Length: 496
Image (cartoon, rainbow, N blue to C red; front, side, top):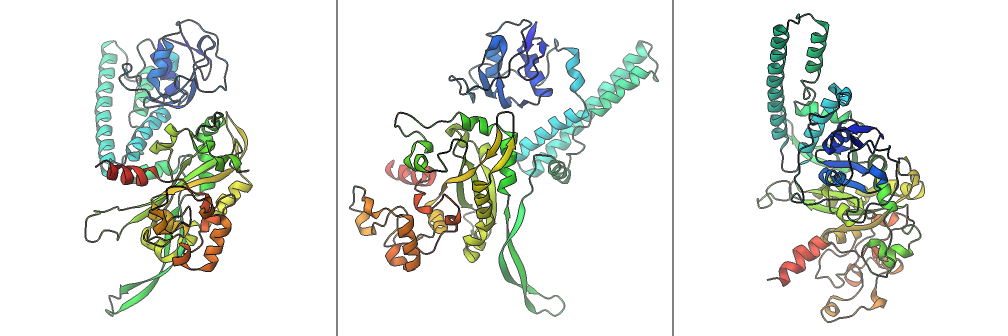
């Protein structure tokens, strides 16, 4: 009696919880209560695919009998229509019973895969999850790890004491080979946090993981700062290289593609065939683009914004203001794009430095990488996709001030031409109720306005460096930011 494992095809004796435990500890297919990859049921030839919360899969297994089922056939099918293979059902649907610990009926052979390495892997997953939380300080993580390690030490010491007492009661000698082997096994898994109990060790551990990608420190320019000479008391100007942090996008994308199932998700995402606009792919810009309309092309959505890392109401607010560039995949369904876990950091810089040295220096390396990705692509080899993947920019999103600054448009919205989409004068904007196609900005008119170098008459201050990316131009970047324009703009104003 049991269920067939969707990964290895073995019959796993026991109920659904046993199979869940097997997928977690043998195949690393589950982290916490969530699948880390798509799982096809495979019971009785069932082709339903699951990801997200494990209890949905557990509930589904109740529809199949616990019998010696034939090994499932690996399937490459689209997610089931009911849950899209991305199920994120409510916690109230069914009881979310814990499946971290295998039930008593767990087969003995399943513990053969459980050792020091597996325990450390689970411990690192716990630490990584806490570090990823924006509401948890690093000092709190370290404190939790130390207290948990002390608790495990106490539990292990008690278990060892009881084992030795029991051995003495049944007449097992202290030097017995089997007893010593048992004690050694317990001792091996009793210190899962020994490489994670300090912030330094945590950083060292994760830097040695194959999923870690080190950010690069790239120069923005040269600055001169006053420094007092303690010997003479004189103030001297000291030269210093101003830099920012850049995560190389080519190895980052390769890592994401090979460690996730983004290519499988992309292959199932098709434009609407009923002329309804549901997503970016349904618009004329994507459909008419020779590059973006290719099915296997990964389309990136960049997001740029500044944020204050200290008290925004303090007199010195803005001194330590940082800017960040993130990206996500336009190919992914909206429920994926809206998840913070699927928004990847690309750059981190000081806002004042960019105002001083410009966006050209900030995006220079990124532009080179993007042109390489569009022309040469990335060679990947995964279970669901094998081949070359081309990558391009779909749209750039941000607040209006940030986007106008990056794109080279007028940053004051009382300017004569305040719009980045068209060249309608500010006085006409207040009266116009229809679109004038003749006023829509084009690459040619944009370049003419850049060459004219006349902000009051054109609404353009300078050329945007992103125009150097193939198949991208700022005049086609017409997507507004729903958060700044609607949720923080129109909606509060009109809802009063």
